[in-house]
Structures are given as structure tokens and as C-alpha cells.
Length: 159
Image (cartoon, rainbow, N blue to C red; front, side, top):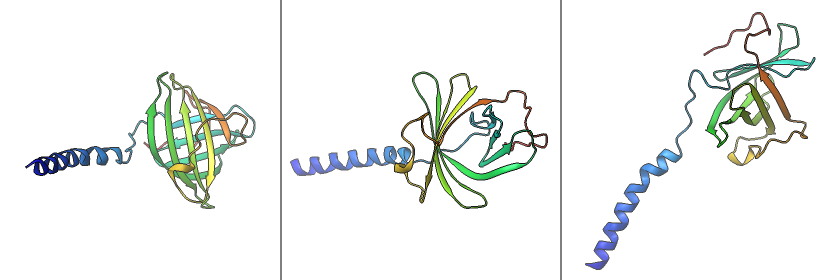
């Protein structure tokens, strides 16, 4: 009788944990108005605009309506820290070369500043994401949001 009770208790606990594990492994489904989407300006003369829209990234030369680099990407996860900053983990590939990358983004609480730490990877893996933002790293960049776009004239942001 004692073994039967232990067995049934174990079964109940196991069945209770199955939905929790399934929830923990759900893939993030982006909204149409993700905070990441929009035009971001790096404030330099070289690459002035990065544009993020649903599943697509474009990098524009300063003052020219010509795409320098394009990529496709997916949002892996999103969370908000205790200060109200929004964080994303994103993975993707450059369209023409197929170069894979994983990125850690931080968007300020006010939504006006974006920091990103990029890592080029051979394969997508959770362990390949940058673990922190490092301003001294060559793959760290900081941008400000273009509120009234002065960027590329032919720019269309897909929602």
C-alpha cells in the first residue's frame, strides 16, 4: 500500500511538471510592434542607419539610399530587467554570405538607445550568445532611435 501511494504521488508530480517544461521551452513569438523594430542611427559618418523589421535587418550607408548589408533574423528571447530596459537575444544570417550571428541587444527604458553585442558563429546555439555588453569589444555598437526618420528615402519598414 505504501509503495502504491508513493508511485501514485510520483505520477501526479510528473504529470504536473510536463506542462511547466513545455512552457519553459516555448519559442518566443514576436509582436508586430517589437521595441527593436525601427530605424537606429549610430551617429557616425560610415554606417548611419540600421533598420530592423519583422525578421529582416538592413544596414544603410550614411546619406545614401543604398543597402550595405542585409540579413534575416529571429528573436530567440526577450525580457525586461529590473530597471525597465528591454533585452533581446537574436540569431540570424547575412543574406549574401550566409554568415551566422547571434546578438545580445539592450534597449533603454525610454526606448531611445540601443546597445548590441554581436558574435559571429558557426552554428546557432544558446551557449554562443554574448553574455554581456562590452564597449571595448569590436563587435559592440550603440545607436539612437530615429524618431522622425532622416534616413533612407525609400525606406519601408515591414510590420
